[in-house]
Length: 232
Image 1 (tube, rainbow, N blue to C red):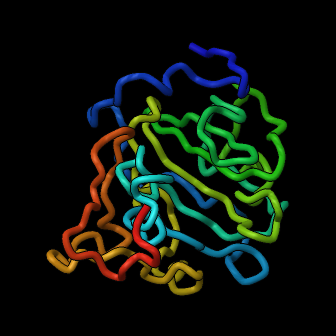
Image 2 (image 1 turned 90 degrees about the horizontal axis):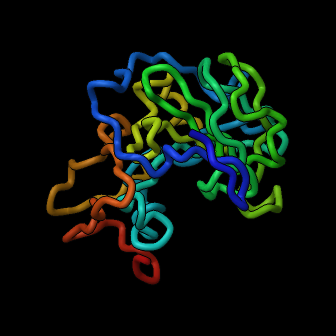
């Protein structure tokens, strides 16, 4: 069912119960990257990974408090206006829905009860709710979360269940050379340590699933590195 609110058209399923594993497609590298061409300093790079990043940890109670303290997507650094492409075949379910990720966002529903969110788009997508799209089709333009096209130009990409209650690590779902992307981009390792269990969540593949509104996962006893000015 679709509803229309002040912020645009959005799916009522956003507030539905989380879907069980039995109806969600397993990861099999079935999706592609949201940009065409090779990564590079003048095209696009992996800016921040999914999971328990140092940036998310510092804002685990504020920005990421409703996402269990975790960065629940991938950030791709890219100049404003870079064409953003659908990672897989699907149907547009939301245009500028209630997800934040300003100034504009888009959600596509895929088979296997998966949905992809494309955040910080520069302008409202010209696509319509209910419109079918194919993998690799241009669906919008990358923008800047701070509206300047200078401060933080990037695309925020999430992979969710269709209820929008579960957030998955996109790496095993997206066919890409993630080792090379992590080396080439500005992200590097970038994960927060708990010195009580220093190996926990220290690889891109081992990051935890997130549940909307669940308890914060990363209230670490001995965090490292220390957050400048304290965690928020």
